[in-house]
Amino acid sequence: MKNVLLSKLTKLTLVSSLLFFACSNKASAEVNTKILNSAIKSCQKNPPKDNSLFKVLADAQGCVKSRYYYISFMSVFNGLNKLGDLRKGFPSSIMIAYLTETSVDQKEFLDCMISKNYHSSECNMFKFGSLARPITNSFSPYICSSCFEAYSTVGSDGNGVNSNLGKPMLQDVFNWFYKLDKPSRKLVIDSLSNSNFFFLLREESQQAAQLYLKLKEKVERDTQQQKRRDLLN
Image (cartoon, rainbow, N blue to C red; front, side):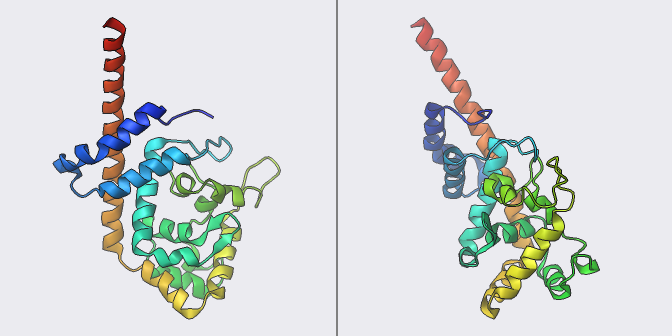
C-alpha cells in the first residue's frame, strides 16, 4: 500500500504545531482546531485503505476532510451511535452523515422510507450505491474502510464489478429504519433537518482540509531545510 501519510516525526510535529498555526491564521477562524487535531490523529492511526477495485485512494487530505465532517456531525448527533449497523461493518450513523453531506433533507428521506420501494420516484434521488461502492474523493471510505467491504460481494458479476449495489443498500436502510422505535426514527429525521448547518459544516470541512495541507507542506519544507542544515553543520 502506498504510504501517503507523513513520517512519524513529521506527524508529531504537524499535530503539535497545529493549534498555534491555526489560531494565528484568520482564514481558518471557523475551523475547530480540536476537531481538526482529532481528525488528523484518526487518519494517522487508522488511515483509509487503498483499494484499486473500488477506486479508493488512501489520500490524507480527503481523509482529514471527511473525518472532520463526521466527527463534527457526531458531536452534535451523538445519539446516532446507538442505532446499530445497516449490515455488519457499516454503521448506520455513517449513512446518515453521508446523506447530510450530500444535501438529502428529511422530507426526501421520509418519502423514500414511506414508499418502501427501491424503484419509486421518491427514492430515485438517493445514490446509496456510492456508499457501498466508494469512488475517489467520496465520503464513506475515508471514515470506514469496512463499509465498502461489507458490500463487496453484493451484485457482483463475478469480475468484481458491482453494478447494482443501490438496491441491497436501500433494502438494508428500509429494514434498519423500520426496526427502530419511534423516538429513534425521530432522532434520525431530526439529524437531517438543518440544511444551513450542514452547508456551513461542508465549508468548514473544506477549510480544515486546506489548512491541513498547508500545515503538512510547511512541516515538510521545514524538515527538509533542517536536514540540509544537519548535513552541512
